[in-house]
Amino acid sequence: MRAAVIVFPGINREVDVANAIEMTSGRRPAMVWHGDSELPDVDLIVIGGGFSYGDYLRCGAMAAHSPIMSEIKRRAAKGVPVLGICNGFQIIAEAGLVPGTLMRNDHLKFVCADVHLKVETSQSLFTNRYQAGQVIKVPVAHGEGNYFVEPNMLKRLEDRGQIAFRYCTAAGELDGSGNPNGSQDNIAGVFNEAKTVLGLMPHPENAIEAQFGGSDGKALFEGLVDALS
Image (tube, rainbow, N blue to C red):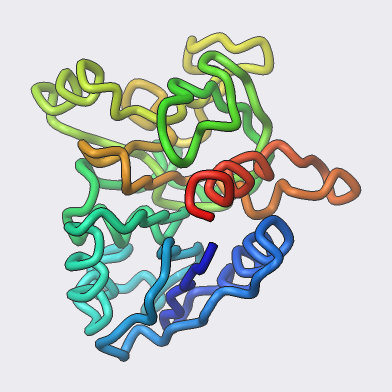
């Protein structure tokens, strides 16, 4: 699997996600600067977490207009998978690659903790190594992860199976007590309509080695390698 990781000023998880890709695929991804206008021939494009442009104006808003984004949108329209994690989710949402927006956490504080997620579907490139209904544990680290979408679009997401992950309790309950940011309907990750683009707030790249706290995120990258190699 050939992958590219996009580097923006202020991004700080690009090495983490590059390491996760290399550990699961055996191949180091290309690191592409946001100011470039071209991408190499790749099977996967990843935008990691951090604070692009210092989160000024609105998280992801400035990065969404960087030169490389035009090419990312062109590739995505052709079906090249795109994964946006945390700030990457904010960027691809601002760029219109996935529906919805990410607002300030409802408690107005930065949250850094392990959370539990319920896998909503196994029918995607990103979730094929999981079972629908499976509960996994991964870390979050964000101040603006409160997902919101208009009610009519929320219904469309539900009807079309575009919700990828929801925050839940360790027992898999969706009662809101496992929601770290007030995200609408406990949504932690969403697909585009074709399920070739995924945006999610938690960090699966930081949950791939048991000795560092857990490996539940590894299956996401292994599934991508299976599907794209």
